[in-house]
Length: 172
Image 1 (cartoon, rainbow, N blue to C red):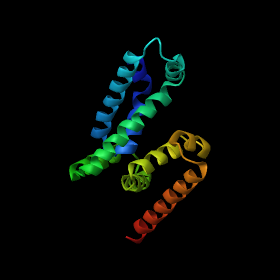
Image 2: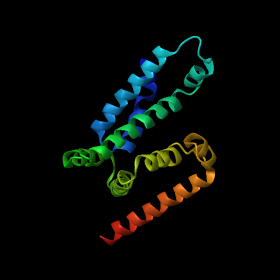
Image 3: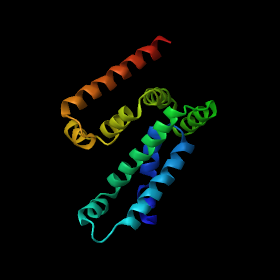
C-alpha cells in the first residue's frame, strides 16, 4: 500500500482538489481513499472471482481514481444536505492557487473552480471523467450506466452552463 501511495497519492490528491476545491478537504478525502483501498485489499477472499482483484493490480491508478470519485461525491452529497462551505475554506483554496499558479493561469483556474463548485455531484463526476480522465462518450455511458445519447445531452448541458458562467464573468 505504501508503494501505491507513493506512486499515485499525488494523482488522487489532485483529483480530490478538482472535486472538492479545498486542499484540506482533499487531504481528508485522500486518506479515506487509501483507507478504503486497504480495506478492499484485506477483504479480498480467495474464493472470489480473481478478475476483481486483477483489474485492481493491472490498473491501480484507475482503481484508486474510481474510489476517489466515490469518496468525493459522498462528501459533496453530505455538503448538499448540510451546506457549510465557510469563507475561510474558499480563502484557503484561493491562497493555495495563488502560490501554485502563474498570474496568467490564475483567473481561468478560479473560473473553472467556480463552474465546478456550481455542479451537482453527478455532473461533477461526469465532468471529471470526461475532461480529466478523457473517457469517450461510450466509455462514460458504460461507466455511468446510461445511454450514449444521455451522455451527449449531459455534456452539452455542462458546456451550456460553462458558457453562461463565462458570459456572467465577462459582464462583471
